[in-house]
Length: 208
Length: 208
DNA sequence: TCATCCAGTTAACAACTGTTCTCCGGAATT
DNA sequence: AATTCCGGAGAACAGTTGTTAACTGGATGA
Image 1: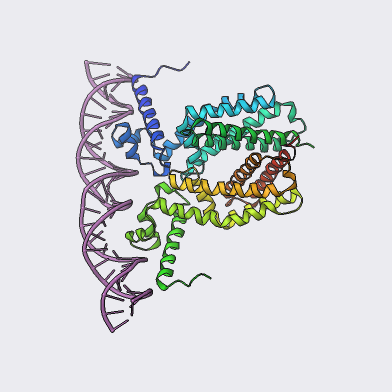
Image 2: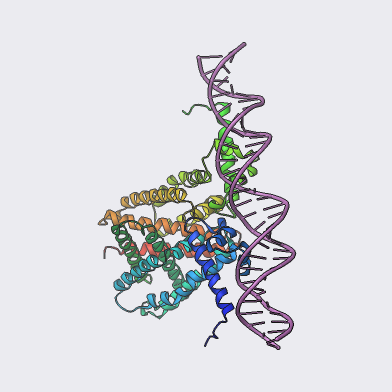
């Protein structure tokens, strides 16, 4: 098992997490490329120079945030795609799961959506890599389905990317609807469900 | 026709355009929320205070950039969707058209992709409004097609949003592949084509 | 021709930025 | 018990930022 951290290491990780939390909060109303180092340290309640003990730059912190936001999501995506049952049930469950995740971690979702095409290259790269991993994993799960018989690897990956992108679009829509009345979120649910239904329909007739 | 502008108005518009051009260039490597007013005036070669003669703030300039980037695109989108011919031909033409547009106006495309979920609320709002207009127009064009018989207005709008989002995803992929060798762009073309093909397939079986 | 307008200039403001170097004190190691 | 390690503090650096006020000089319209 993992060795119990010394007081020192534990305190360091605690401060580091405080940096990540404070940055995430500040990033709700701006982009990473405008996030100042002093701004973050001020929010944490620590001297500006302490920042350098944990990150080389704000871009570096951004990459760490990408891992926090997406790193732990892989098992969830795998099981979601592979859930057995009627395709209609699977769609409903996937949309429900996205809605739930957005409601629970809105700042993480906002960060990813914002910085995916944002102004900081290393962060874009990190997100791109993670999303590619998602697509690969979805492809692997899709390949297990008997509906994938006769599909080329390339076509499966094409479909997987479509699903991943659709997931992000839906998450972003839920995010915009977060503060809105319940029926707005209901509208998003119905929209996303039908879009996934249409894609699934196209999938079923791909080999015609 | 439009009244010829006086020397004064003409010069003002020229400077204003210089602001937009300089800002767009600066925004290739950062986000709008980190774009400084002085930074822009320096690039234009003008005093900082001159900025206020044209824009209230950088956010205001951003909204103007949204109009420049998307405002003139509506007729193009309309005619693209409504082009007659085999659906396979239509897909190929649409993808080709996106590729061409990205190659011709990469900075505009980058700006839209970046600020769609960016840190400046009025700009996000402006982009959202324009994209909604696109979706409405696509819906109107789709409705003319005989394949749309039996479709509800709501389902047509759902499909239209799917097309618009797919258009943006594809544009963003072409953008990333801009500096890459030709075969990378070819890969994107093939990917986008197949994704559109699958969506079109789902569309054809929607009423089953 | 003369008064008015107005895009752009100059100067100055307090507040902020990232980064360096030096130091402190408690944890970790021997 | 003595020594090393190291996360964080403090002070100072040269530059930067947005915004204000008062100005200049050429185009505009009476």
